Length: 212
Image (cartoon, rainbow, N blue to C red; front, top):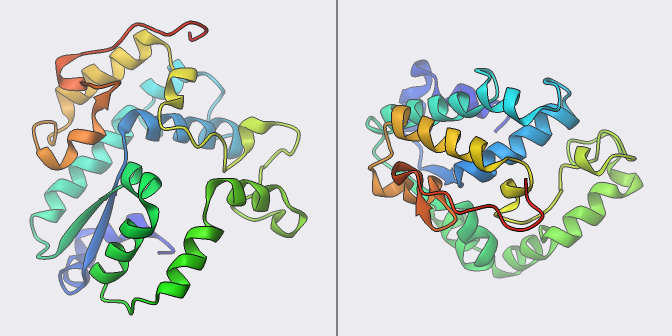
C-alpha cells in the first residue's frame, strides 16, 4: 500500500501469486482529468496546460496506457485477481465494499463497514479535507485559496468534459485504439467508454453548451 507501483515489478510477482489481488478499474478519461489536477495544481509537476499534459510521456495518456498494459501482462501470471469498478463502488458502495473485504479474506463486520461507508462519503471527505485537523495531509488542498488544488474536488464521473476539449478527447481515444492492448478485453470496456460510446470506435459526442 505504501508503494503500490512497486508491487507490479517482476521481483514481487511471487508475493502477488500468494495473495488475493484487487485491481480497481476507472474510466480512462476520468483518471486523466484527476491526474491533470494532481500534476498541475497539487504537485505542480507540469504547467497547467491540458494539451501538454495529455501529450507528455510522464503523466499523460501514454503513461496511463503503459500502466494498464503492464498490469495486463502481469495479471497473466496471477491466479487470483478480482476487478472492481470505481463507478460501481461510487454508486453501490456498501455492497461493493463488502465484496472487496471478502475477496481479501478479511473478517466482515457490518458495523465497521457501515462506519467506513459513512466516513468515506464524498461530502464528508470534502469537509474533512478542508478541516484544520487534515491540514498538511495528502487529503488537504495544497493551496486553500485555489479549489483546483483540492484532492476531493468534484465527485462527478464525467467532469473530464470540463477539463479537456473535444479534440483532446478524440486524441485520447486515438491513443487508446492504437496502443492499449486491452481495448478488446471485456474487463476493460468501462475504462475506455466515452459518453456511452467506445474509444475504439472514436465515438465522441459533441460538446455540451458551456463546455470547451
